[in-house]
Every structure is written in structure tokens, then in C-alpha cells.
Image 1 (tube, rainbow, N blue to C red):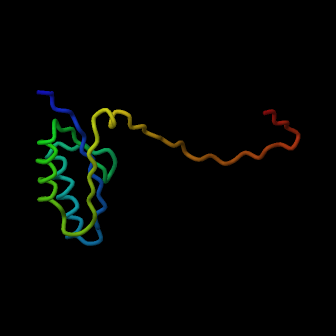
Image 2: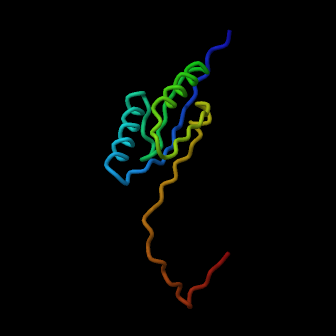
Image 3: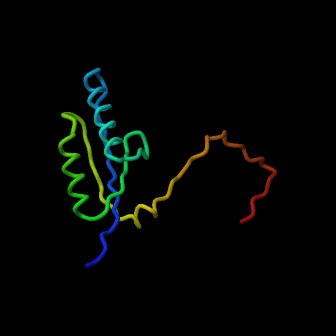
Length: 108
């Protein structure tokens, strides 16, 4: 019998927050994710680690039970190896472009 593989569940969501009731539903969903062991990657992107297909199915069912009435929720299953290969790109504040002096020579 082979050992169960570690997987990551990544949940992406875009929930409306235009009224107090909708904000409350969105916050309730975020709190559910946090209590269920998810960690925030970005404001509306959460991830958690699970072990094996049985755990994937269990957490899939939990997500279905907690879905808000409005908005979009998506989730992606990836292996731990794929998740570890994620690259984080961090941009720097844009600076003003410098004008090139006509007297400068560019060498390639």
C-alpha cells in the first residue's frame, strides 16, 4: 500500500460586498476558510494542505456546504510539489522613465 500524497487546495473567490448583508456573507466565508485550516495567500485566495484523496473529497464537501448565495468561488487541487514550484513576483514601485541623453552611445 502506497503512502497518501500531500495535496494543496487553493480557493479563489470573488464575492459581492455592496451591502451590509453581502459583506457579512463574504466575511462569514473567509472566517470559515480560516477555521478550516486555510491560510490566506492574497485577499481572496486561500490555500490548505491535505493528505490523500479522501481528505480532498471531505474538504470539497465542506466548501460546498459553506458557499455564499452570490459571487464566485473556485478551487484548484495541486500536488505539494506543484505548489512548492510557485513563483512569487513582487513588483517595485514604478519610477519615472529617464530620458536618454542624445550624446550617450548604446552598445549591444
